[in-house]
Length: 261
Length: 197
Image: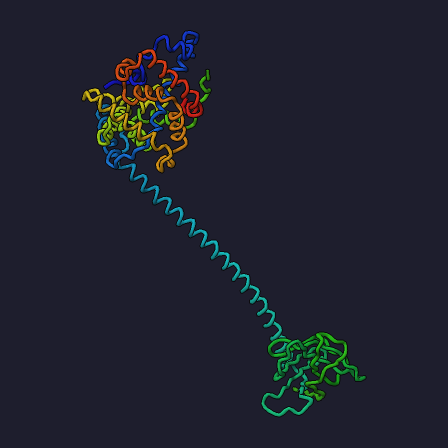
């Protein structure tokens, strides 16, 4: 088997006067001649690129690698152990598995980030609910203390017009013994979209003083202050949220104060 | 005259490293060179010997030779791809010479020349890389008489004297045509040569 220079010398009998004519050979330095020769050789190396490539049969690669493994082992018996031919497909398979695992981990991490974000949002929502619940509980306890306090007075709020039936609206105004803290709770009033149930206290001179709008499902309201000398309470249905004087109909009123123990 | 580039392309450096790894017994490096060049070398082998099965035998011999002689590879003498091409060509030409079937090779050359140049824009050609397209174009643009002597010298392994004898063209004319073809290709393929050197 030939090897080395013979194989690279693709046209050993090309020299002659023709090289002078074509390449100006005699005028070239040794380095320039070597460069021309090298380039000619590389041009030859490119010529097969003009052919249609032919896919080898699958067994060819295996045969080459198998024979290569055997030949090198015989030539270099003391050489370090080389990778076995099956290591290539094994490495490829491991690479595929690694890529799959990485993709799966990335997908899982992305899903976990989304779940964590949803959980964080839910925690914030629960915290807001807890604060609201705590506030509501505090108000309820305060109102409970008020309605159960010694010397509390109750003022029933009744409909101004006759309204027979079980759904008759009614309410109770609790006034603490200090005549400052109060709590009112009303039931049975029909829903009134875009209108407002407003509580008024009537002062000793008959002036009506706004005490706020009844809000919430149970239409309740409380405050630590009450005008001095209040003698009656009214609930009106207003079209404006905070009028200074009542303009709507009176739906509930109460002027009788009942003192409890 | 184009001086050689100061530094080889990254691909050339990588392939030299692969050969160096082969010299140290790394079968993975052999596998990578095979993956990169097997179809090209098989096309060359079949072009020379005229038979696909025998072409595969040639390619096998060439890769095993490269495997065994990797430590003898000299980067200053040729690129790795050219080294593999020339080994494959030599093994293929050895076969047709040993069987004394040069006529068969000539006939194969004629068939290949006809096929290649009859359908330069066929569907398969579209799938070729830029280098393949460029080689086809530049070979097609050579005068037919120059292309003929070049292909006989390279693919059929004929010497200049044998080409003169086969074609009846004076030896000096054969040499001039071969040299002219090489000169044109050196110029036309400057970019590819820059990648290899």
